[in-house]
Length: 123
Image 1 (cartoon, one colour):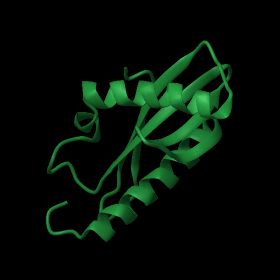
Image 2 (cartoon, rainbow, N blue to C red; image 1 turned 30 degrees about the vertical axis):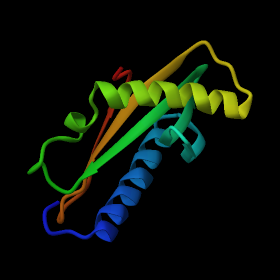
Image 3 (cartoon, rainbow, N blue to C red; image 1 turned 180 degrees about the vertical axis):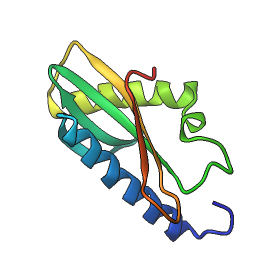
Image 4 (cartoon, rainbow, N blue to C red; image 1 turned 60 degrees about the horizontal axis):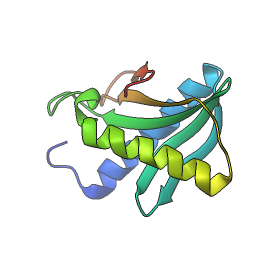
């Protein structure tokens, strides 16, 4: 997003998270937490799908000029998300055997509808 302000990027990210949440809820998932933070970082969405706890990273782009949302989630980010999932469970007194890290990629062009892709189990 060349030439955009931090406020514009923040607004785009918030919009993407709302779109992602609507998409996941429509698919039958239950939202447990939004933008949960601790000293180690932030989880965009924490959800439940059946008996599985889902730590969800949302990446929103207005174009693919600087790569896909998928390219923004590397090994270090995946490791952090796994640790954050453990921290979220500890903070909420929850222990579940199945934790999954998902990605929701949102492409929000200037014109036309958003394109949403939910990738289960990215890590």
